[in-house]
Image 1 (cartoon, rainbow, N blue to C red):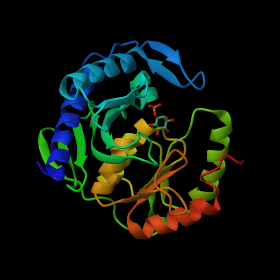
Image 2 (cartoon, rainbow, N blue to C red; image 1 turned 30 degrees about the vertical axis):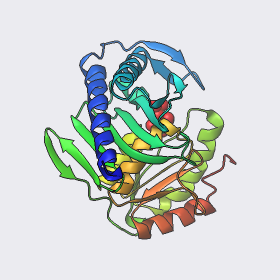
Image 3 (cartoon, protein in one colour; image 1 turned 135 degrees about the vertical axis):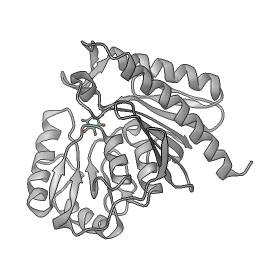
Length: 279
Ligand code: LIP
């Protein structure tokens, strides 16, 4: 089996497992979603369905890919022996899920190497939006696609528009200090672009970029599981997705757009200090 064929097979595993977890969190969402715990702040919540979703994903991947490692948002890292690690966000957009607001997804990617954005090579990934029955996926070197109500089409990436006409997605952290810094950056950006959209899920922001529904996306503070699948899908759709100053996408900053807009946006975000928490 060629490396590319191998990546396609991994894509099929990601799609199958993400779809099963997506159906669970949507079909079995209780009227009153129960918060199981909080993490970095009182508004950084973990619901019981986050935990149920990750439990299902862990069981399925242990069955289908027993030698691989797994890094999950809620359960942490279980090392494997294959050199591959599955990077899992059982519900990305947890606050949207808690409130019953559209904009939550299951995000699953498989990476080679250390499971950190600075070191990994993402081989395949899937972001599944169960509320809208949208299954975004990609295999490295094979492009990106979305299955929408059972019909599959390629993702063509964002248009290359001037900064002043750009519809830009972003998000904010949970800690007050980080949010104050992000508000400062936003105040410098907003007069220079068409508008901002804050969807509440990095994975779906990156898929919206891949599908041309956003012209650009940037966010500071994304965890590996927030970005692993979505960055691959956006890159395979043709977007340039990096950090600042020639660095790769990471927790420090993720910036995605078509090439010309990416240059203009990263230059402005660099001047605005978007990769620091200085206020
Ligand atoms: C979310 C990210 C989103 C960010 C939110 C939150 P979660 O992840 O996907 O981009 O702006 O603050 O971190 O917490 O829903 O898994």
